[in-house]
Structure formats: structure tokens, C-alpha cells
Length: 114
Length: 112
Image 1: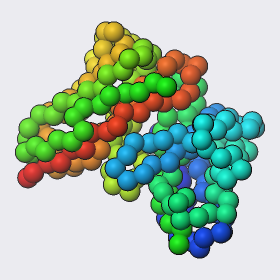
Image 2 (image 1 turned 120 degrees about the vertical axis):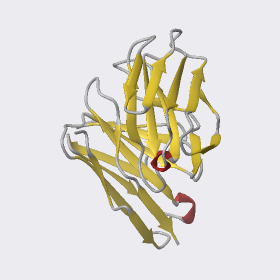
Image 3 (image 1 turned 90 degrees about the vertical axis):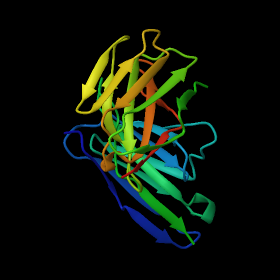
Image 4 (image 1 turned 90 degrees about the horizontal axis):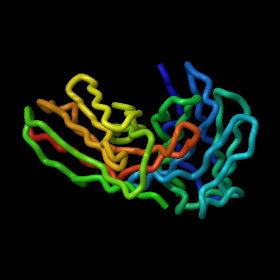
């Protein structure tokens, strides 16, 4: 149980394009979803927390207009990296949780901006 | 903000050996979690600890929630090649709190 699916697993695109990443909870209703960014050989860095039907809460230093988060249903959250540039290249991971349960993570999306 | 100090940062062991890693914090946490991350994948939950002093096992893995609520350890007994990966501890302040604070990770390498 507690499976989180993330899509796509890898994306390569040109600088200036926008990229959308989907995060779905397959067998539970994720009242809260989280988006993380991970640089090579580093720990996970929380970008934002989103509750279903509410605006996302962004961590300090994360540009909300750059990283658009939508949590329209209890099983789907999306992260859109707008006007992506090479410095946005990274490993993006989502997680979901329901009340009183630990976070369960997706398999991540490797984003490469050329 | 809160930080977790996880050690060691890396371990190189022989197959069959036992492994021990730990996390300490200057802050009190109400939940401790241990995750394992394989290359190119997301973290997978190994063990969740909810009470101070709690000792929980999951197969060859054993984790404890420190009595002071400021630390936790993870032991792996009789390591096998598939134990290779990065192990992260994470602390959660309370049931109502949602964010996790992660340790820096312990990279485990096993020589066959």
C-alpha cells in the first residue's frame, strides 16, 4: 500500500520551455503532497507543501511563480517548472501523505534543461 | 531551522557485516522515520517510530527512537548486496506538523 507514482521519470528539454511533472497517489488519498528537489550526493530539499484545494506553501527561497504547484484532487498534484533554464536541472521528487501516516515518495523525475 | 546530524556519511563494509548509523538533533521530534534511496529513485520508507524509547524491527533492520526524542539509530544485521544505497533519517515535529527534517544521508557500500 501507499504507492506514489510520478511521471515522467526523465525529461530533457530546451531552455525556455515549461515542464509539467505529475504526482499521483495510487492507493490512498493524499491530503497533503510535498515537492522536493535533490542535487547530486545531497539530501532532499523541501520546495513546497500543498494541501488539496489550497494554495501551496513554498519554502523560503523557492520562487512560486517559477515552480507552479496545483493540487486539484486528493490523488494528483502537479509541479510546473516555468521557463526552465539549465540551473533548474535537478532531480525532483514528490511525496504524499494522509493524516497521521508517514510520507511516501514517488520515484522522482530527472529534469535536464539544455 | 532544525537540522539533523546523521553519521557516518559513508560506510564501506564486507558482505555479512552488521551496520549501524544514527541521527541526532538539537530539537525534539515526535516521529522518526528511516528511508532508503537507491540511485535514480525516490526514498522508500523502512521504519517509522512514534514513541520515545520505541524499538522496531523490519526484517534485518532495527531502529530505535531515543528516549530524549532527540536521536534515533538504525541497525542492519548480516548485510547483503541489495542493502547498498543511501539511508536517510527524517524527523517530524508532531502529528499535526507535516514537514520532515532530513539528515544528510549515509551512503552504504558493500564489498562482496
